Image (tube, rainbow, N blue to C red; front, side, top):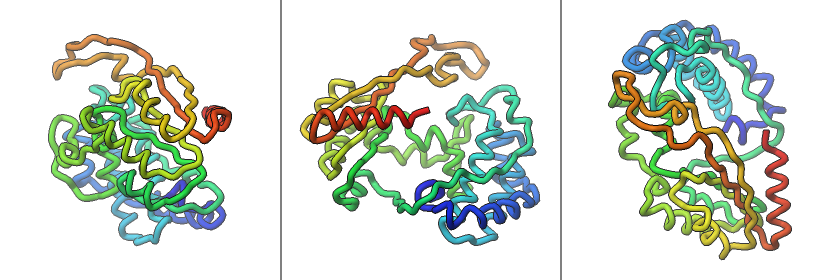
Length: 288
């Protein structure tokens, strides 16, 4: 809602005013601070209490959408700048990261001009409801690691439901239950095929990864019935945790670092091959 639905022309000025109100909220040491700053160490308790106070104040403001989501995004991004992880929330650092000791600072999200609409549905259902579109972009989970498991603290910050948690990382208990078919090696091919069949898109972009349950050749086989396919590959460093290696609770390394780089795959599908290639070129130009 913040980045797609909200029009900067309509909301940027008033969002700045509400952001100033939110920044003045008193710190509160409650469930959020205890769970994710003391029982686990994703944020320093000083920042955790500020996050908690602002989140409570946000509910008190009872803002309409998309303003509520703009404020929530600002708070989430501020928290992300002072967390103590290597990027994902599957674990936290044993010692506080330098940024975790900096004071929390709210910033206005970079709202975009223009109107849009958002929804949160099963991908195949969303595709059916969308009807014919010019462009569809798919970025499904690659393997057994679910997005909610990787970013469970953000899920709890948004829902603000004080969930039951488990493990050293204090993950939400429903992380174990809310699995996507894309997290299953056995079901991912069928899920992807059903989504592609539900889509009516003139051009299709699909982002995937060489560590995914669908190989490059298998993805090409899935996509070819829907048009001409072009492909480009990008090499990236793996996330910091993978580069460090696996360690047990005593800090002893228990696993080997197998590789340091990932290959990101971007597929384009269009009625003609030159159209697919043009879509890839446009996508590459937009990347940092």
